[in-house]
Length: 382
Image (cartoon, rainbow, N blue to C red; front, side, top):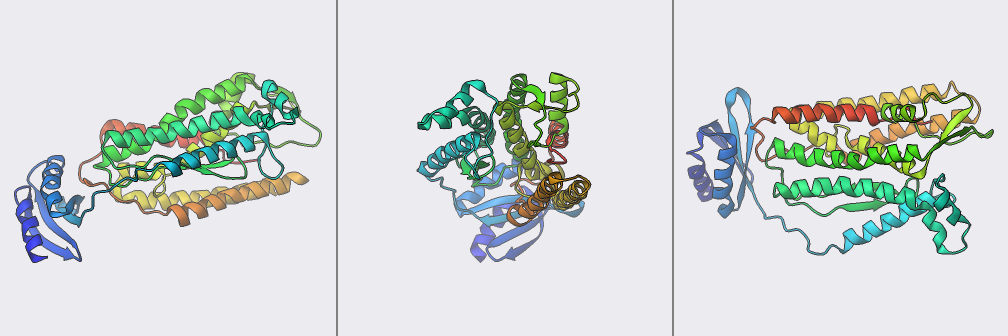
């Protein structure tokens, strides 16, 4: 270890005026002032450390001091088999198709497309194609979202997996998809681009889909027994108003399955934009605010709990079966807060170069992403 430490130091000294060094197990930390730009320093140190089995990480400390951490490095090897990815994708296609068709106690069932609804009377398996408008639209949004992450990560030469889609036998038929990052982002700019590419790409499909779905929707009298309705976000409410104007009392929008799937896609995108931990919004928050991202994540979890409490109190003022329905869905916000706290967590690994600031243009896009979150999240599901 002493020999390795000496070799690492000799490779650092021309890019960092070393003040002190510290050994933390297998990690060697050198502190001082950089004598060159952080990006150039990282390039030089990667080339020098890699033959020694180490990877450099640059961390900003107080008063212009920079810490260069030399961490043991293993070249990430992506699995060559994609069987799991393909099987999960096919299973998710099936589960969203079933959700769109609407088996009892499994799928919600989305009707409103005369062409495909006619297939429900079929006695063959063709009847499940009645769920195709919903399934195709939702899967298109999810696929484009994940490929946005994947190709942007590949552009930055980050080791990344193909998407893993998550089938789910209830509700919309899926819990979305994930991509595994097997290497750290190079800097805050690349971290931001990889994180933001997914939601923005998905929205390029979801927004035209909901506009088209609303164009195929109709205004009908409310059924006497009540009806199931998704909560309106500011975006969906504005688009509905542009399409239909003011809805007359006693009437409702009978949405086309494409509009329902687009609503689900917008909702999933909004959840991903929460600035918490490893979510897309959490990565964006780290790129923008660095170490302060943890405080932002905690504030977001607190806001979700508050939203659940407000929704719960609001539901108690309704009457009849609406009380149970509204209170039940208000608990979703408590569930989301618990899941992101326990499963996603508030931690996020920093990029290799955590010294170079994010560009001004990306800060503007970050504000746009925050605005999109506010526009797309439905405060209440009723």
